[in-house]
Image (cartoon, rainbow, N blue to C red):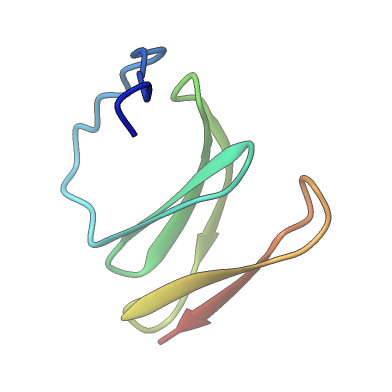
Length: 74
């Protein structure tokens, strides 16, 4: 454990307050009340989903690269 070192590679700034954050291999999933945004590691928006109810929880359950599954609780 003494040989473990890390290096900061990117900083992503969020302007909105988010409720949940999940990290996959290539994307960040961030929930804002009734929306989930999929961001790349450069901070760019890849996709956004809107729901009729608030997002209470979300969990990544794995899968093939760039095709991971996300379970969302409303």
